[in-house]
Image (cartoon, rainbow, N blue to C red; front, side):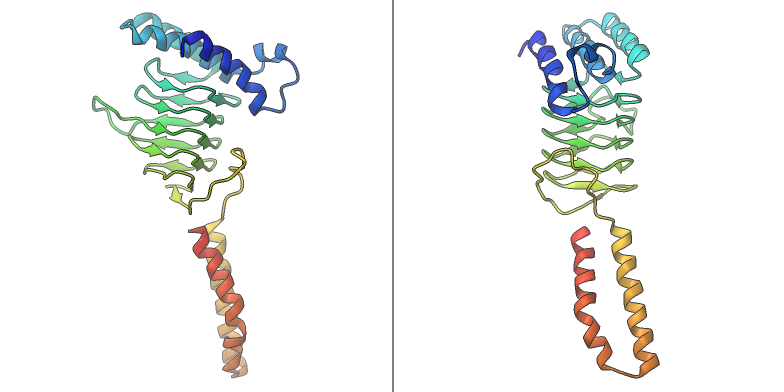
Length: 232
């Protein structure tokens, strides 16, 4: 697909991802992520032809007016949406698939100064929550979700959700809503709930001397524990 078709798709894609868009006029003033992609498309096209100074100049100008830092060598697919844009950083060897949604303060960065592939590869339809840091030559599988403020340093399978610092991989479950990245299991909450309930039952059993009390409570405890295991 040529650069002009990609740019057209970028502009059309905003309406599909942001219900806050009420007129095309707003595209020119309220979507720095869109304009960062616009400048990147141009810079990347020139960079791919062997030019270096002009693409880097375009990238620097884009960063100045959009606060989005995208290296001109980064490969970005079609219909990518950078929401709000502020503070987004995409490194030189990063590869981003199609229909990806990236929120503000996201970093697709490296953990090495060695030459070669050192930035993430992002699959199709991935959602990366606000403030997330995805570091190193790792892969985010298709339809994966990265929770807000998570730090991802390992591969994330297709359809999985990664949350936490460092990020933990949760059970794979494909969702029909790509923007539901706020629905995240709280692993710590589930295990503490289980432990507190278990201690309370033990204390009550010791206090009353009723050995049957444990058996009566086992069903509820098993449900709580099952919720914890599912979260993991």
